[in-house]
Length: 149
View 1 (cartoon, rainbow, N blue to C red):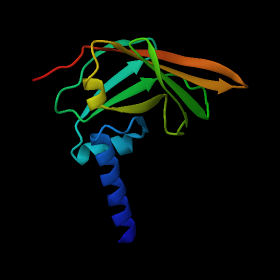
View 2: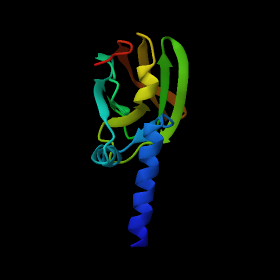
View 3: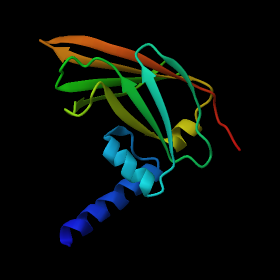
């Protein structure tokens, strides 16, 4: 019973952090599915390396999730670099889950994306192999700017 209460409290905390625009991170499908079941509105985009995909978020979206696909070549960790409108932003290194199966799932608060003008949001994934950085791929969301229904 106490373990279930801890899991429920963690779920509420994650949901609150996502909805308050304070979280951008890598997540698993299980976490994303739980957020959706808990009522978090998710806008999903899937990109292959080299892709340019139009994107937008709506007023009622809480979260933007981006599936980035690539050949991680058995790497133990992945580095994500993000550029918005040509300006360097987030640079994050995380362990690569054994369950990644050639894609990672990155989430961003929809409120942050919603307030961007029409810009490109670029992600670059890379790994380190034998001390050498290898680019897995570059992925571009072509953001249309704020949209309202």
